[in-house]
Length: 446
Image: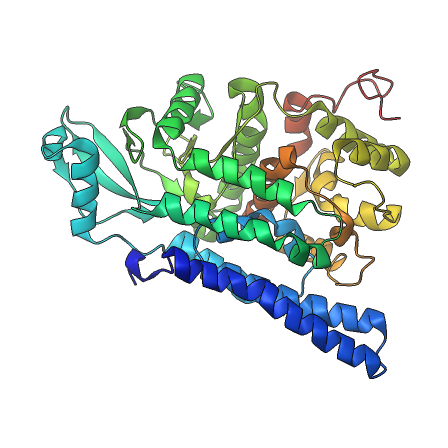
């Protein structure tokens, strides 16, 4: 399958997205009939929610672009759904991430001619027409720059920007539909934030600026390597080539020692970057990381970054510390202040504690082991569609959309690695508020 086979035309994509509210209206009418027939309101509501969820994830999984990005951002919701609903969606998402269909060679040459000029080949001593990797909005080719350096040439898919941003115009109309399943979520704010970040991701010049900033900060670093930018414009990005073992192969073939080392560096990079660079790498997919022969962690793809000039939000560290101290009343007050619990929404403290545990537990002990079994046990505690489920009551504030995406995906990667390491030390070193005095005036949660 080639890119041209994907549902990229605006009319086709709009029609697919339009099936969501229409389908919901039909299910709601069916639910009313069942209530009249004697079924309890709660059972009917749960059935409607389940069918709605099934259709949402089916449509999101079929579409590349903005719809898929929204599905990724709502991973918080995936945790509350049975595997039979989100399983096919996750499989489609993984397929799109890991094996995106390549552009025809003629299209690659056309883009390079449009972006670099008719003499584009003069920039290279050689250029491999077959891509070495493909992602959601572009693909990468290996080449040799005119000065002899091996380089990676990232080329954006023609029409990717229009398709992505067009999706968000359609998805913005679906707020009421998501409200049925997630009454605590301000989906319009989430969509607005994602749309802004995606617009940045489409601009390779902006990505080049971010990658260069990381490369400068981590130049000669003992733990990390970021290949620097060689040349860039809005749709083509040329950077230094980097060899290494993909993190996905470390997951499947690495020794316990190698997986522990990779996981610790992975966490250290995500936690230290906001403090050192003022940015958070917001796409912690295993394909974006390499273990190098010198023991360093190599990092790729800076299209999605969360700009945090002041480092991590201080409230993040403060509330993590207070959770570990067992003061759920203060934690809930802080979550309300930060916008995670909207006005008028009541949440059971015990249910909230169970939901937050996977995110906080590794910071409460000197050493922690992540595993698939541990994550499955944590997910099981929140996997139901009852209206009282805490996941359905929570909001995802716009300012935390990418932070949540990173942490949720990061935990998944660590569980795949099965890493054992002193993660708490990294939080102490890099996350503001985690070790501050509990009476710190800045807390002021009341």
